[in-house]
View 1 (cartoon, rainbow, N blue to C red):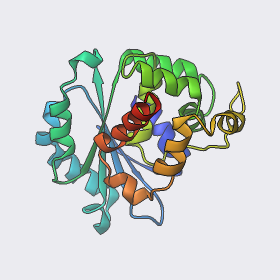
View 2: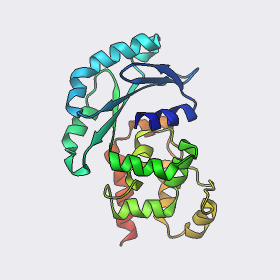
View 3: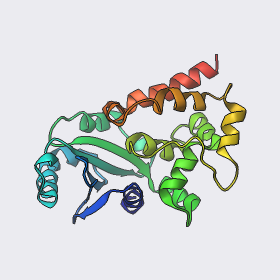
Length: 225
């Protein structure tokens, strides 16, 4: 997973600052730092974060790092059923050192997504998949129990610079045509236009996963009334 995420950061214009047990990314001329770490045991993060913070700070060598450091934790599970939501919230709500974000996934989801992307550009393809109606429907109807669809939305929630481009064209069908046809009755378009695309990056970063998922669930509820 860390290789896939690295491709996304680089495509988004982040500079790879290196790292041994983790990756450090920064945007030139902006106070925005991300440390990306692979994790198979979420319970260790709280105890290990100070060591990660010190090592990352030594790599960045910038006084602005202390208050602008994000930690993206890529947490692999054998099965979605193994996830204990409370343990994820405990880490994400911990206020020390980093603003912490957890992207959970299974090896099966990752392999399926890799196969779907193939040789296409990773970031562009993910941004296209987000706006593909069939992907959204499968995520909504089989939440966290599908091939890769829910993983795509988790990535969009956890990585705020993944953009949802309404006018994109993918290799199968014009998303612009999909949006035009479904504008009046597709809750996804309304959600993206009115809720997610209308907020600033800082507001998005301040939102919890629960806040964003509630938007999706509210949309689903409204649709079924």
